[in-house]
Length: 91
Image 1: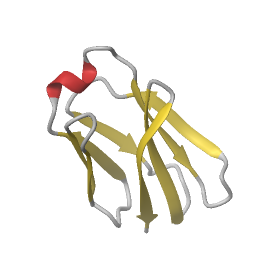
Image 2: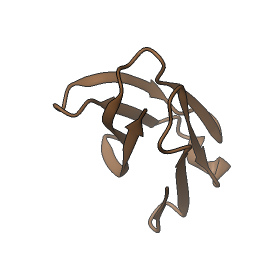
Image 3: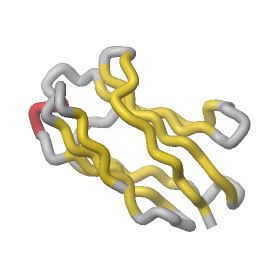
């Protein structure tokens, strides 16, 4: 799944989706990390925050193996603003 944010000249992808063990969050823009303000938040289907971390390079691995199968929502935040979100299916 690929999302583009025109304001930041940023293309983000999250794969594989569906997944069973981990998710890779990838960006095409190395300048996105200059201010070190980008992070991800992973929510369960009920809206509970279950994982969050700074995004510090072009590829971030998000481990999902400790979570049960289901639907999750991955939100990408920069400077407290939502950049984009992904619906993630974990097998």
